[in-house]
Image 1 (tube, helix red, strand yellow):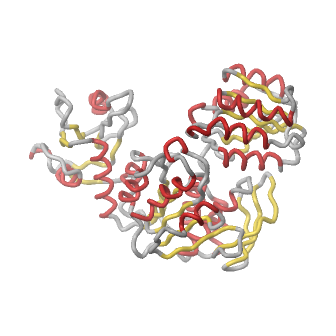
Image 2 (image 1 turned 135 degrees about the vertical axis):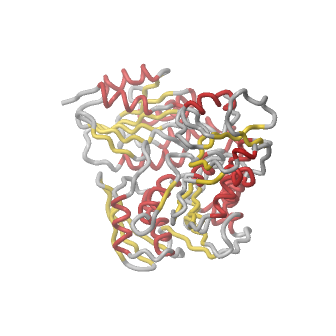
Image 3 (image 1 turned 30 degrees about the vertical axis):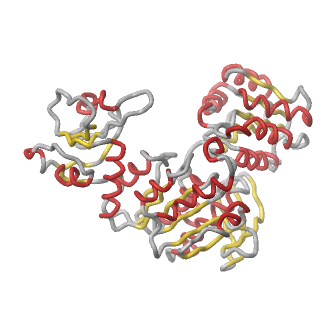
Length: 463
């Protein structure tokens, strides 16, 4: 983590007001959370929609903070702690990360995309970690706060940093890539997500391509070459960097073929640029493409084939994404962290192919952020559900209700069940789930359907 004197910190954030007697104090790490801050760290109070972090300075001090950044628009606190005055604490946090990144001898792999970026991050970090000291974005901290905090958490001797970058509107990735300054940039896919602000898939592609603004001039751009929207937008997009692509189509640099998949993961053959078979212990055909991105990064950094497989085996996967949970007499496919039409369709396809179960159930919540076409897209997914490969669809949320109504055209009204609350949903599931069932749980983050997963694990016992 960052270790710098307060005098250096003041320069890095373009701040002022630090008293001379405090200049030589050295902070070890940065936190924006007064509850989890550790001894010796710098506290950066942020102003959110609900809370103003400046109100929690005393708590931060009690928990170990030894200095803080402070917005010039906030009244000075009556607390004896070194303060550095800045125009905006969030921008100062980003400036601090930007300056620290410039001082590190680290290779950064930046990853964005509508779907698959978190799993790709996990896979890339797993492979790179077989040879290099590697750190990655923790969880889903991929925004204007999480990205700088990840950079600031890097030790001086970190060799590889895998940074996830998310966006909901133009300009966000432009800012993140200016902080991270990647040596490799990856775009995993362009899907129907964040349409509320970006309106079209073409605009989503353009927003993701902002990652190239911060890519090192000699860096590598890797993208999913089968994605039709990316291919369309890139025809008129000037790319000055070295480019490699991956996918199933023959024009790609890294080409693979799926051999088999089961509950132990996917088995595939890399056909180009070399011939080799791999096993990725993650379920779902979509993870083949995430694995290919990882292979492309490994090849770029000269990691041998045997270490690629070792990296697959040792990947530390982020929770609530493609998690197979073996409960008491049934199985849960937990993908409750996020949802959009393309990722939901991919998980339904995975569910269809789980052949060793006597009953298959999909629990589907609202897909948020889809803008004016949100109802239409929910209905589209509902109509696509295969009545021969799924037994029941449970829905929750006003938008998912539309999905369920559309699904009734194929499944009939008795196999589609809507709930108005999580407690009601849980009780209906308990009444329906049979031994040797598999239950997919998927929705946007705001619905917090991990509560449903937790309840089923703890409360339902089948024999």
